[in-house]
Image (tube, rainbow, N blue to C red):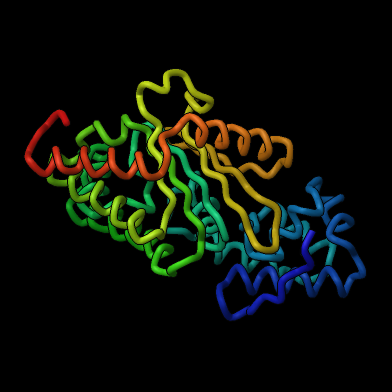
Amino acid sequence: MPGPKNLDPSSSPRAMIGAELRYARENAGLSQAELGEPLFVSGSFIGQLESGTRRLHLEYAVQLDEILGTNGFFERNCKALARSKYPDHFAEAAEAEAVASAIRHYLPLLIPGLLQTPAYAAALFRTYRPTASDTEIEELVATRMERTHLLDDPTTPLLWVILDEAALRRPVGGPAAMAEALCHSADLAHRRRIIMQVLPFDAGAHAAMGGSLKLMEFADAPPLCFVDGVDMGKLLDDPATVARHTLTFSLLQAAALSPQASLALVESVAHDYGNGDQRP
């Protein structure tokens, strides 16, 4: 495992918490595994906290203060960091996504959030929350668009997306919104900012028919996997589980069209939507 990264505590609140945790642990003469033992977590989990990959939850913060004698420091800061603009089930995954070096994502029915356009996202949120005010929908869309700025960096993170053909064919927001969203994804692929594949209908049964899958890798911490459903999600770090889901994604890559054929299909469907075809 690579050595600990020298965090810049000013780069983010979580980086500051991680740096302080590492300092307090080393000052107490404990290894990551030794600190994790009374918390019933692995040394890798402690490393993820120190690297800023994982969010520190209150139950662990209280125990860390007791073990390390930090006089409530972690509890106080944990409460401040707990406030998030993301839903509870997704907040930790969004924070991990922001520091990932590589992301591999498959969604069965939707264009992934990092590739969405404002019109596409607004149509989704309006469907999810039919009684929400325009202001609420605008805030939700703005938050989602903030996430897309991860792709402003020309190389990091590596983003490998597998789009199910169902996501191309379901007209979220109508033909114009779909044409825009698919053209945006195609543009990112043309610029080699993402690797994009399409899992076609004629691939038949596949390894991820049970739901979505997001794998995240980090420069200085073990990989994570996020699986989610309607108003629920779970961030997984068990090595065997992550390895199993990594194999699942590899099987999807093998079943999907090549990047070149995928791009051609996305552009073809976008063209049909652009011509106002409701059923491309």
